[in-house]
Image (cartoon, rainbow, N blue to C red; front, side, top):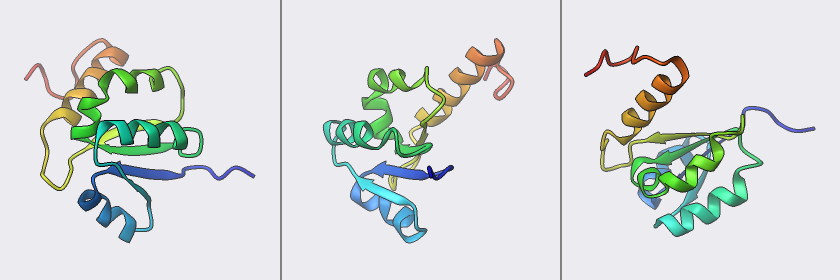
Length: 108
């Protein structure tokens, strides 16, 4: 039986430590090539995959292939270095695409 709601985290070694401690499947990816390899392997197994903003920005084009499928949902989150604002940009863009308006940031 397939388990639902499985969550994974992909990021640099330091950033994944907290997720591992919380019992989340965490995969270390020191660069975009390794992250791409990991995402290809785990995409069918996990429903939600968190990816550090640095990797998400570098993999922007590659990640678009997942937009058409229901799962996995790939979410960009800050790394141990803090937020670059990229995750917020992606969220804003997705909301505008889905709703046709900017309801989150009121044009700011």
